[in-house]
Image (cartoon, rainbow, N blue to C red):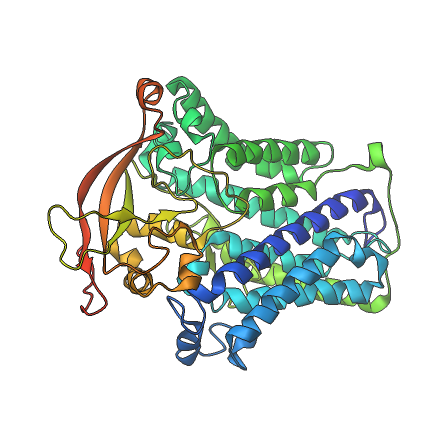
Length: 477
């Protein structure tokens, strides 16, 4: 190891960069598949309307120059192509400057999407991808050794991700302190997965042990990342194992995989695999790396202060470029699960005997007999927002009313976000939204009925509406 690079982390950098390219690829695919219905010119929250009222300095984006659905499509698919090239190893076959340009292009394109994404992109893993993506610009490629300062900044990012999540739990819901949060979490998390029912029915002492292990992994283990090897590798390994447990228990988009990828950058794999290039790279490259590192260290002050603050912010950015952010999740745990179920009818005069047909979503709970699907690391943005909307009508404004209008109009981009259209030939005359309480079925109920969920009607969330009616805001639960 010289003063600038650490060739023993050559393989670790390779794992990180290939993993990051895969996540970028997925993120751009999500954008390409969903933007038209959510953010397009006729989307639920149109990006042009947002851009008209948002200055560039608050949300830097290429789309401030010009927006069109065609341009957004080009941006998304360009991101897919460049990500795929980096995943295939093209970044290691070109000069350092070309590899840096490829990573810079991905960061600029995805920043442009996130900064016009509004509520659909208000998730911590968006900033996490951008922060890690900015660091990747300066990590070099196979022709140079990994810069030491950038490797330390990757560990600093992983530390804030894990330690911040641990602190927000201790400062938040009491169930984290008395070790009971997992009595509820597997059932009430935003989007349960195919194994969540079994996780929920684990013995309660094991749930308490899970919470205690989570506290240890998030509040103690991250400090080991800054210690000499092999302690840093052991700490990274524990984080990876914990994140794989979370992958198995639910659907959290690419959040867990980003943590795994970041942890991989701290592994010392030189003993079994050897080392790679040891060169420090050209002088201009060293200057750029050190300048970027100085900028990021300076910007770290506010996120670091946030960690020790009694009023810790969760998943916040302190600069519009999202270079250094604060993270955290589930400071409070929902104890009861509510779901909004949207139904439609072709009855022009709905009454007590009207047949209502339910719209099925791809990921969120609906039909009680349907096994929760494995969605992550893919991200179903509408399904996630439906979970938030069920907690409070404030989260449903203004997009839920727009969604009902699109269903009444038979809008094809919106219908493609759903698993099934119950009105394939002609749109319904009326739609309504009902609020249900969902809980996992017991073992006995599952054996008797085959249902994974039991649901009970709570109330009408939105009354029947038709296109000729004015749609009022929901009163909520």
